[in-house]
Amino acid sequence: MRGVRRAGATPLSVSAYAILGLLASGPQSAYQLTRQMDRSLRFFWPRATSKLYEAPKALVSHGLATANADTVGRRRRTVYSITPSGRRALRHWLGAGQPSALTLESEALLRVWLATHASRPDLLAAIDAIREQAHATLARGTEIATEHLDHGPPPERAHINALVFRFLWDFNQMLVRWADWADAEVAPWTDVSPSPAKQQRALEVLSDALRER
Image 1: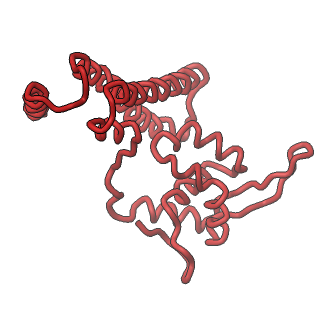
Image 2: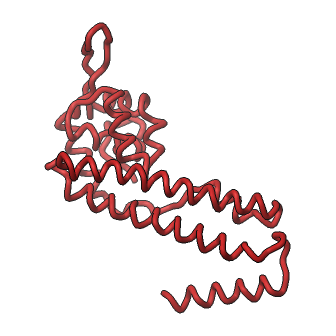
Image 3: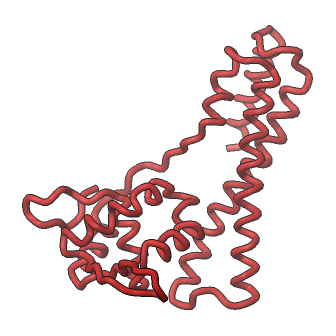
């Protein structure tokens, strides 16, 4: 999707709009943006992290944010603030047509899919990697939820945060359940080579999935 931009300027990326959205909550330095991303964006838009030092400068060049030098002790830092044009651009982008389709990017799942070229231990390791990542995300989510329950969530956006939190929580619980199921499926295998029994079981899995829909 394309957002508001100055004539002749390079279109902003989705990551730039994500960072613009963070600035809409108040002025922030790169360090503060990093902390915000660790608690939010990295769970569903990790690309923004890689654009941390590039995107704010692009926002400034588009007139959507300002950059001001600041000093904390002896350390100098740049604090970015959203401009009125930035708020208008953010609102325009948020309402600009259909978002791109939800996508899944997982090297571990790719390794599972290619496991006919690997070994049974390799397959089990890939499945376990998915479980471990999900457990790590759930542990981080538990920390954030506990902190909010003990000290109160951000009042201006607690209701929105809860929507995204529940999506990520349910998704990662699903990953744990899937990993446990996949382990049980692979348990009787002696290797990853095809066999009539495995093919028949694959058809049962497909049939069960359609019945559960």
